[in-house]
Image 1 (spheres, rainbow, N blue to C red):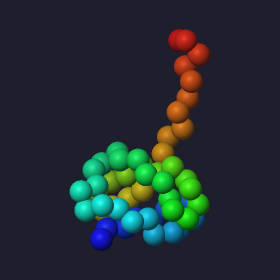
Image 2: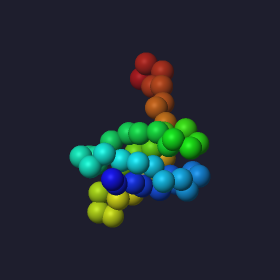
Image 3: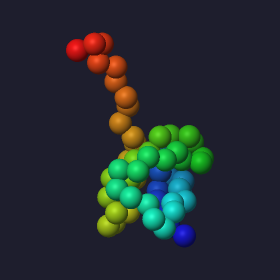
Image 4: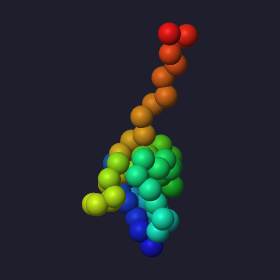
Length: 56
């Protein structure tokens, strides 16, 4: 089974074998929203925060 490292708490985050680039997931330890930013090497980063555009 694949796993990545949470950049927030350094926990191992289990990933499916068919994980894709820019997939979003949640750290099981700290609950941080994560994004797969690279597949080789497998790298996770904090997911971007959704910002409201205020109708612009």
